[in-house]
Image (cartoon, rainbow over all chains, first blue to last red; front, side):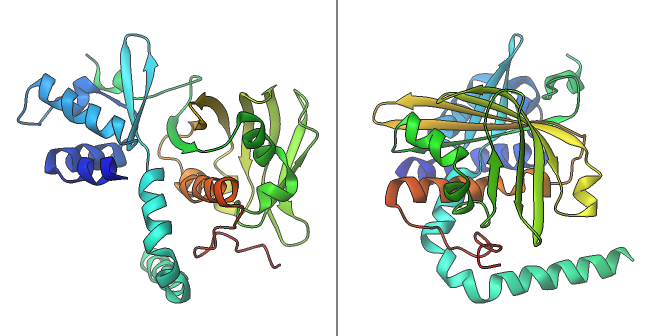
Length: 105
Length: 163
């Protein structure tokens, strides 16, 4: 668990997670675009994220694709947030759904 | 490099998600938890999955008369290491429109634990995120069940259990 918090305690690494959240399964070449950092720097950050289990990779041809793995964050949620959210988180998400479906109409 | 080519396209169609979790258990117990109807229900919104788990067999995840979650074929069955399933979501009209995707379960022993990797791919471009959005909760519940014998009872995690 220390590794997860350490990995999250850096704005570049959170930015990388944001990008994978927007679009999963990206290569290093795509991820390093628009980051003011060397390819090596981005690689180092991805390695920290991978070691924390927040990013998983799969090889495809010569490229390595990176995927956001949200499961460790879910474990943190279930450990400390779950019981507080119980009574009204579901009511809130229902409310959100109602509002959003009304907005769509 | 063509930017589009850098994204995951597997099996010729659509997008792909990967979920990973380490669970302190044996591959055999993990396989049992994935394929036992009763155990499955305890970490999958209270919904069991029924199949005879032979290669080419069908499976169905439902609470009869209450909710149908998914159905499909067990394309590859290699206990206790690898299970490949076709996946058709059934819980709403919206998700039914998404058609058939693929779910691959891979179990790898690591020390006294197992790494479980669930790859959900052959999803349509911009697939409805409900299709794969349940995996983190399911996998967290599976870990809790195998490591503590308890049910994970965070909001929604057992929503059909008492039905």
